[in-house]
Length: 342
Image 1 (cartoon, rainbow, N blue to C red):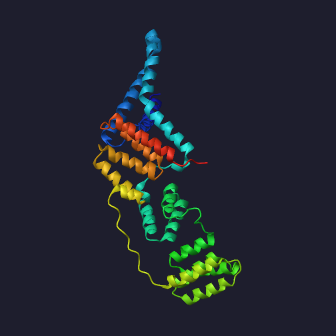
Image 2: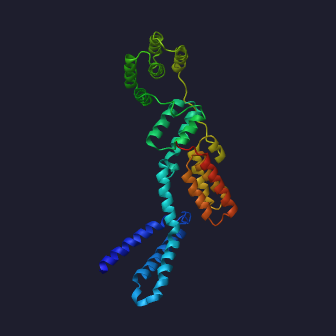
């Protein structure tokens, strides 16, 4: 029996230690204090449980009755915070499947900044291709991607291409021009009026293979097809000349210096990374904490990330009730501004 009690005690200790990790006051800013809180909570629980289950009720008689109420009540007060946080996280995962993972700025910083740089330098096709890749893999917030593209008049959904064209575009971007040419020619054999395939093939010939004569030949064939808008023909005619000109690689402009400029220009990953570094250096700075929450909640649409930071503000000893109320009001604004799912 002693062996069974040891196993049960070990399992109970592991379980309550795991549950103590959901303590909303354990913000992670002071690991030593958080560790002490968890140890005290777990030890107190084991002592109370030992008294409750190890007491001989028959021997104590009526004196055991107060323990029936005092110990369970104490345990409830001791664990109400972690249990509430556990249930809250489970409920959020249930109703909002898009936020199942915590926002990780280090994972998408480069991709988001690369999209912003590509758009600023007029390389919209490459930016759109990268956005579709991130959307398919789930490595970036869809709202952030749509916002970046909308600032430059591009809609993420409207930019989708049929599968063969997508494959040809990918091959061309990888420098596999012969394979891309084969796919595009096969599309034009199936449908000579396919203006999208014709335009991509013309660009491949003029820009990548330096064969403007073959691009002009594709254009002449396209002009003979019915139902091809004249605007497409005119655009292709002008573009062949531009594509044939060798262009220097665009100069990438330096990143803005201030956090507000980074956010305003769409460098969301970099802005969050800078703010996180500053808040670690200055944990008592309320404005920095609030700006970090704003970057998550307002600019990235990551309400859960903003909620976590606001909870840290609530539990921090340096922030007064007025500052906490300001942070809560801002959080409510960001919640209301987030587009609702149909």
